[in-house]
Picture 1 (cartoon, helix red, strand yellow):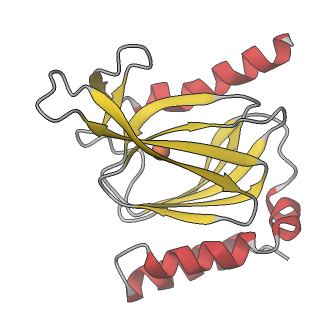
Picture 2 (tube, helix red, strand yellow):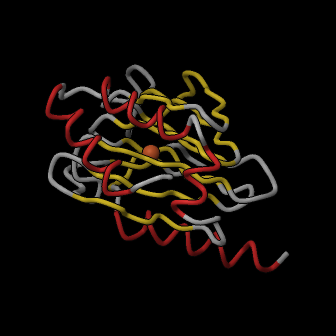
Length: 186
Ligand SMILES: [Fe+2]
């Protein structure tokens, strides 16, 4: 059975032993290696949501449910992250600033398709956008090596112009609600 308190304690112990994402990734990988157990513990996803499960200055754990075909614009975190998929799929595009570009303009640098049981570490300087490419909800445990909701000069990039702007945590969370509204229209 997936015990959230134990998972949080395991992540805290991993972080205490190694400030990088290395040991936390192992904790997340172990959890999503049995996705049915995580589904039972966190509940079958019913709607898109960014649900914080634990928040502190050096660690944030969230249950992230992506709406069908939902995409979030490119953004950075300024902290490492680990993404563990327990149902569905996530496609990540990785971006970099255009060398010598203006207004933080981005260009695509790579991509990674994540599937159930994957536990993917993201370095602290990563810029990524995320799409749920399938027709049903995707569920993932996201662990961040810091306080996810502390903006601290974080950025996002306009989906059309790929130009940089300030990241707003309320806006980021509201996007999940907007995705729900779109989904129910189908
Ligand atoms: Fe992200």
